[in-house]
Image (cartoon, rainbow, N blue to C red; front, side, top):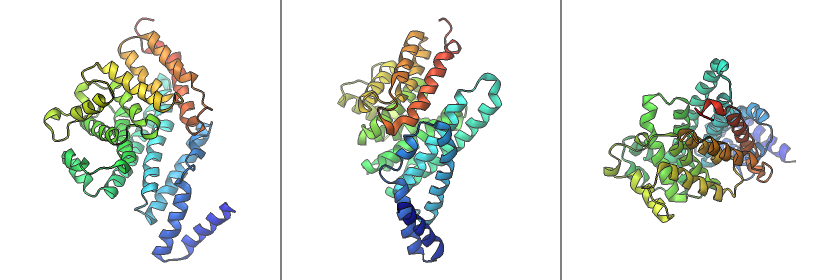
Length: 334
């Protein structure tokens, strides 16, 4: 009956010319697609290739619905997250598992991933601007204090997705000087989200910071004038650390482990992603045993224990296996 009901709504949308009827019907369909529990149809699947084929059509449906209902905040969030997740899980991740002789295919996938990250980031910015008019202009001008002054917890998903979009695009095009300059912006967005709701989405923000501190030099993370700025990442992050019994003066390795521990705690150990992300710190330190040990923790996550995260756990476990199989590519002495 539900399928028939939604079909009738779609027919209503295409039959009547009234904008109000069109928007009302579109919103009902959009809410049905993005409401509680609907996302798990994708995230609980155990076949990444099947979802990779299905997700682009869904995202185009979201974009079509947004043309009729451009201020549907839930739909904007779902569209932003959908494009960024697609870029990460189904373009960048498969590209990183290709062999050297497949370099052309890898470059093609990474170029598409960059484009999808940007596309998702546009929707994340759209959500922030809709909730907090003027945010974009303040933030782009570098007046982060004014941009973030009135933000509340409803901004957190969009802060997270915008930060993830910037960092995702940079990770596939890391020699782009323009993107390098955007890294502190992503970190600032993430830090503000930490201030507002550090527990967001079972540790997703901590996964973001595991990736940041495990992979980037400090010189890229902060603006050169950060401590004199009206919104200082260093001060804000330091305050967050102080409130959690940690100190910004500790080593970058310790920062990685701080965020890893919080991510594992918030996800109750049912998320493979933070372990895979943290493996980069062991490459930097040339600690092959630590590298294998942390990736083994990712592999040992029971993908059926948290069905709503099954798909991404499978994708991350594939990467963990691949990294262990190619360990000689990352370490001078084994």
